[in-house]
Structures are given as C-alpha cells and as structure tokens.
Length: 92
Image 1 (cartoon, rainbow, N blue to C red):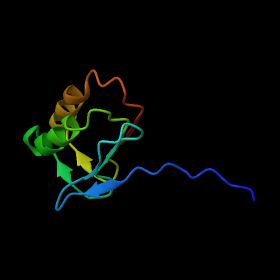
Image 2 (cartoon, rainbow, N blue to C red; image 1 turned 30 degrees about the horizontal axis):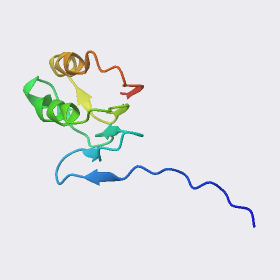
Image 3 (spheres, rainbow, N blue to C red; image 1 turned 90 degrees about the horizontal axis):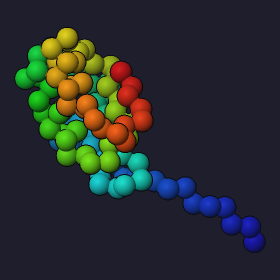
C-alpha cells in the first residue's frame, strides 16, 4: 500500500472582533486582517494591530489587503515591523 505524506497545517485562531492570529507554531506564522474593510488613518488606529503583531515572535507573513491605511498609520506600522528578520511576505 502506498502512503502519501500528510501536509502540515497550522491552526489559526479567530479572535472575537479582531484579526486572525495564528497559534505560536514556529512552522508558519501568518497575521491577517485581509478584507475587513478597516479605515486606519492615524497611529492610534493601528495600535491594536501593532500589539497583535508584537505578540507573534515568528511572524512570517502579513496580509492587509482590503483595508485603507493612511500615511500616519502606515508609518507607524512600518516602524513596528522594522527589524523583523523572519518576515517573508507582506501583502498590502
């Protein structure tokens, strides 16, 4: 009997009224607020997102498409991500 390898799946937890945040799996760590239609213009608007990102030590991918980011919010988000060596994909 032939046996195919079982793919690795990373469980993702949905926080009530918040972004999708993965568990602490070191294999694949994704942060997504994709398609939520958020309008984030100021640094204050992205503070909860920055806090969620800081809580993910092995952050590899960020998905932000489908939301509106103003200049101040974008600058604040960029400053929070500075130095994140493991970040491979940034989907805006």
